[in-house]
Length: 95
Picture 1: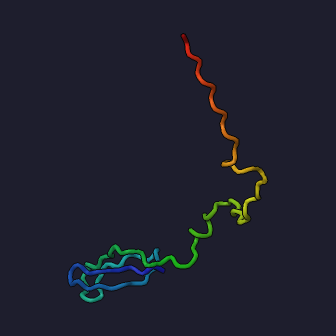
Picture 2: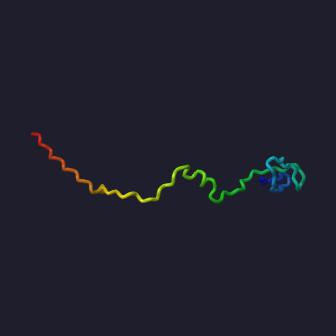
Picture 3: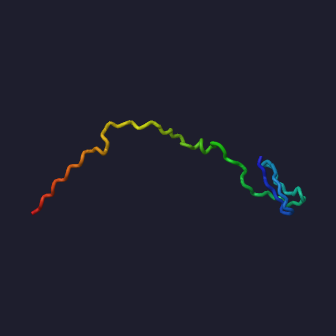
């Protein structure tokens, strides 16, 4: 059941009340008896602790985990040992 904060506009009396959501809103102040008891807007009183849904339900979204195996060694020559380019032929003089 939620806890609602109430404050009287007549005498400024404040009280937190444990109520069901279907219970009627309180209107009469318990301190002064006048009909000025109003429900206040308050922040939510819960905390997300632990692993939570956000870390378990949507993480990786069905994809397989990456393999932590080292890449296979390639026996081919490294790219730096590629054959050198052949020099270009000298340009012919047009005379």
